[in-house]
Amino acid sequence: MHDEKLGPFIAQLENSKAHFFIDEANERTLFVDATNEVLLKNVPVEKAFRSLVDKTQKLYDEYWAKADKK
Image 1: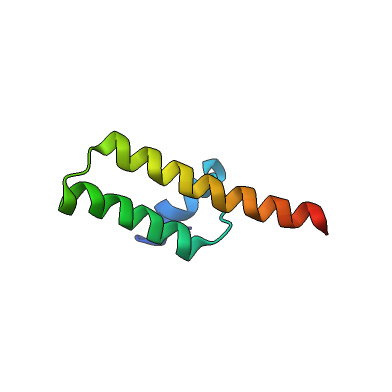
Image 2: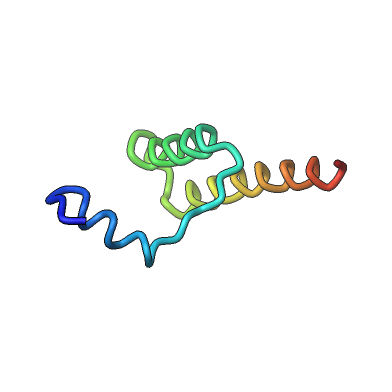
């Protein structure tokens, strides 16, 4: 594609990868909340990140547990 803006985007699609979202809105909220913990409440990055990972993992665990019951 020879479009000035879309051309580079289209060209890189061949090498792109996608993340499987269980609940994109909720995952985004978790990420924003973790960022705010660090920036607004001075929570250490490692602690906020660990909490984010734990909460995100819980989303995935609950999703797959429900999927297994079907």
